[in-house]
Length: 288
Image (cartoon, rainbow, N blue to C red; front, top):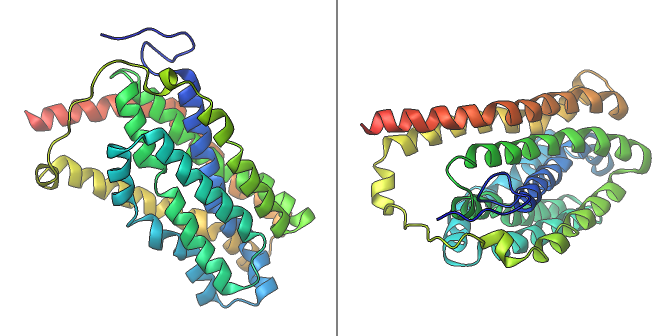
């Protein structure tokens, strides 16, 4: 039985929860993309080689990718809301401390810690949506989160790049990290009913072995791999490419880089509900 709640995007999930999850996705991508935006400045200040810069940009994924599995396990067995809050606290502090880094090794360690904290973002968020959103709401809720994901690097590249050009990259990292942690205040004050308010149990999912035999799972993984490769190629290397190869200044680079992600953010809100519905239909057809 569903419970209607004012301020929701439907009968199920609270609009406040969707807004805060969207904001968390926004913050998540601002923080993970900030090093790429600052790449030209950091490379010059610390006299980094191309190999060292590549290590810094990839170090985030050393912990982010493998930690998705334990993060999902924690989100399933603990309070997903608090798992998300803990992860955001870790990555916010790591972002702020990046602004105080004294050299290559400290930057490398902080990027690994950032990946560790950010690994909880989607396992915890999707667990909350699975428990809270009704079937007809999930596409729209995911669309808003995807828009936040794309708006993050758009804002980070534009505003972050301009601020770095004016005040230096260290100030921007410290400010971004402190601003990220502020998200915890409204999230932890969200009433329990707004996060886990529907009094309905979610059935246990299929066992791991059954999932690993699923064609739908492997197809989704392949599609996500292709999409993620292009996203992070642009997110990681576009600022350095525009500045070092084409000779643009930081101020000239920022609107061009931001425009790519802004366009993607708009399409996420418009198209994701339709794509979600089509995907569900396709899964049903394959299952039959």
